[in-house]
Length: 76
Image (cartoon, rainbow, N blue to C red; front, top):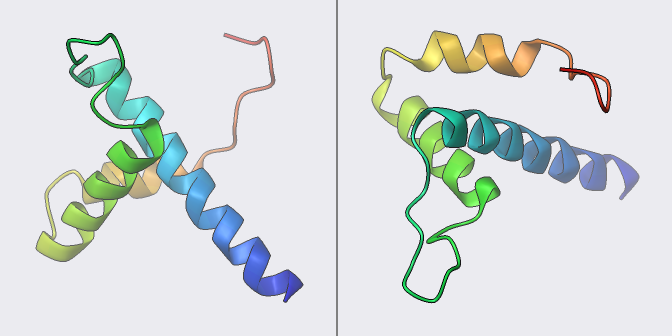
């Protein structure tokens, strides 16, 4: 059970990381009520699924992004 939970957390973090990276390049639209159209996790998950399914040219860049370590909190 612990391994399964760990795998789910790794998938969630990967989607979040790609979503934050994509937000810096192409921001998610903001709806009329002021909230974004989708979360960072969903934005990243859609991009990852699309890249894996259709073998997009940015797939190596996404893999490189996921293989680099996170920055320390507060570091630029």
